[in-house]
Image (cartoon, rainbow, N blue to C red; front, side, top):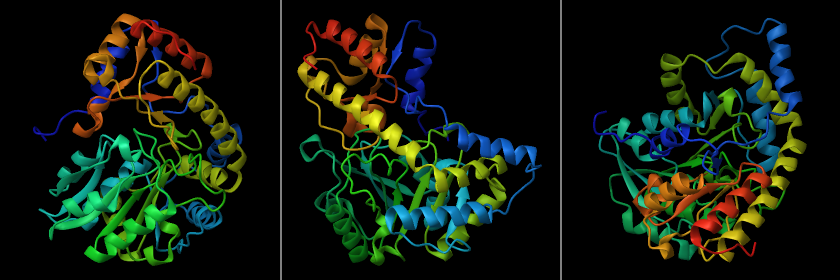
Length: 383
């Protein structure tokens, strides 16, 4: 534990918390409130006395709703009785999956830049995290060629997150098929963190692209997903894992002894989101897309080379042209101009020279941030 670093995101936002008049493009949380009909389902559950433990696996109603949703949206089929586990957010699902499948010394391939918890979570399972670089030149896609350079006989799994936090990168169906073939060749498990799957701006709709939607993935993929991002339900702390029954059973044992069950009220809200939340997701997605297009044009217009993000609600501009390192850039922008973003190196060494900006905030605030950034750079946006 002493060797584990603290989150680079939280470390940076300790500074933000002490500042005033800050326009934040930093927090990866939707600025929308949870749609009321979803929250009302939790209120109704409370009024009806739904304040007790549920099954360790989650309520049958939610697991059935998840199964219906995954088949409808991704053409992915799971048996709700034995192949779906409800968790406390996707972060718990990631932790459970890694601990369930890894022995001490096993290696887990993961891409960088990536969500900050990946390498520490692998280490907490006494396994070995092995970073695979993704590059702006490839639009931060994960390629089989890069994976092949890092795989060894000790490799047990590939952990990936697309659409990606922090880069906004996505994978095509061909990319996914190639990665699945790589996993089959080396007998690896694919841990697919798809919490941003609904926020894919170039996907066919439906079915959306998912590793779980490939028939050949049935015995090799553990799908990790949740409600925080697409349905603006961060405070509900609700996620789920789907995969082979033996893996889900092993994950359930750890969950059983450490957590017991996900919150009952949250699970009731989850059923409503799965069955009747499509219109809400589409509405929020349209607004994210509008913000993305504005911010992308503005950043490139100010000379910050930026790859077009195709998913999630993050953009990852290259700030090396300013002559500042990513942390110095972020600190100057915060302290001198009142705009918060996150240094790219918080997401692994491969993120050095970039910063993450979240457009999960209003367009008005984004325009404020762009104006202040323009003053810092001594130029004006053409966005």
